[in-house]
Image (cartoon, rainbow, N blue to C red; front, side, top):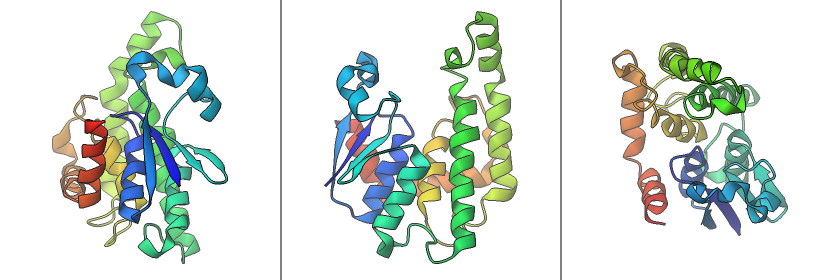
Length: 207
């Protein structure tokens, strides 16, 4: 049995969606950020990074969203959540999830977590001020060249779509001009209607 540690409103939603899409049997454990449970001794034993998501498997704990997504796609390979039979397409999928993790999410984090990179209040304020520009530029690249069709990789849903949908939930709060991203916003609308997405969001809202 898998156990997903998550917090609402975080990138853990992408893995939650992937598990639902895969029809996996899994449990969830909510990590309460308002009580800083992510920094508590109990959770740090599971994930010393003190962040979510973390996925407990029979073989150990996995962290980092791109790794969790490809693990779910591989473990439930019959569900077609990644192009596992094509080395090049699989690498493209991993390039996309890596971009979301290393660039898009980091730019977003400058809005609330500038203290990770600077101590000077002026520097932190400057990072926050730049978020609409940096996040907007990152999503503009997705809009103009990375979103290949109705789904990220073309005509079929993949774990890439779960991840893009999750991060696109934050665009308004990041102050990004949505009028420049019609394809991203249409993708977000379409993915929001999937049964697995509805189920995952409802579960995180209820717990």
